[in-house]
Image (cartoon, rainbow, N blue to C red):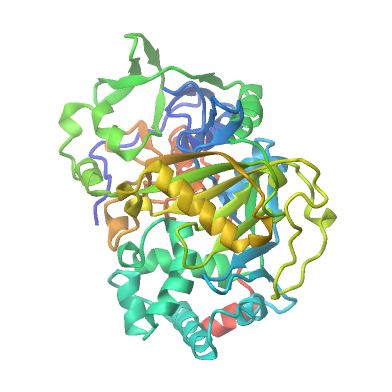
Length: 502
């Protein structure tokens, strides 16, 4: 296993050493800044772009003037570090927790089924919703239940592809496509043959099986720019953090085996005592000294592969649906987020109750909504196959799929479509990938690495990014003689789940 083991001893630093320079204003860098600034460190965050957020950012659409996100970012209930970060930076109210999801059946079976927890304890809390999904036969449901049972008890010393494991469990191609792939492609943005067993198991066990709240999804109700610029940046500045955008870093400045500063692209330098490099993995080597480029922990970063995520924004002159979101089975479209409904910040308790497990009744276009239009955002993860399609073709395909699901709204006119693709959105969770992910402690004593690509125990998620920043902060606090635990505890497993695992 590749370790970022340092050859230098780690000195016990005096409490006066408090200047921390963080390179990168994405979630990892901001999480480290939050943990350190709240504990009295003098923090400077340097971000090369004009805005914070990294890959979780927004742009202004020139035609409509609306601020739209490059991709929809959501967090599950099991993401305890991300939720802690939101609480600490005062932005939790900008997210709405969805205690029910909506699944759209495959073509020809376009029922919209409400998926919600029953009163049963985990891992049985979601069983009734799953059993009501009409596009699975009784035999297929038994296959899935068998696979989930085996998954909770499985212990593999050697990682392998999740598809190989599913084949071994005799999961049919239909079950793999309509169930296992449906969940994992959204969570990990890869196909089953490119997902490690360990990462797939974590998604299902932590998210759906071990506790009642792990599966609940939190969705931002405002553009991501508002989350980062309005709330998070303000909270950090309140703690004295110096946040600088349009401040790209060219390289680290070294002296005596330690980092003493960073050189910006304009030639100026920023000095510090402790440093966090919170940039994408493919930028790390360009900022490190040449003599470290062949270090095993650094060279291994070249082997991390990435996957693209596409986001299709559609503007209609009338509402297609009142649902806040939906997950699609067997379609190019995977997740639909109704930005018009979500942006209304209407609490779930104010919405009309929908039948559990049955077909959801949705108002026709314009009914009860006047002339109000709507904007839908459709996410396509693991978007490798879109490389052979033009933007116009993808938009037309997504529009046709939405109209198939909601045919009563055929009069709704598509005013505009736009596709944004984040080509290196996440690292691919291939078998064995954790062995080449870097630890937060770099080979340089006073330099930490942060990013969802570092070794956190989590895949490429917002949770993984925040955890990496927290772990980097823990290392710095320990080096400064102020050791503290920053990463919060995971959600506790239900008693019944623990009994079934025994």
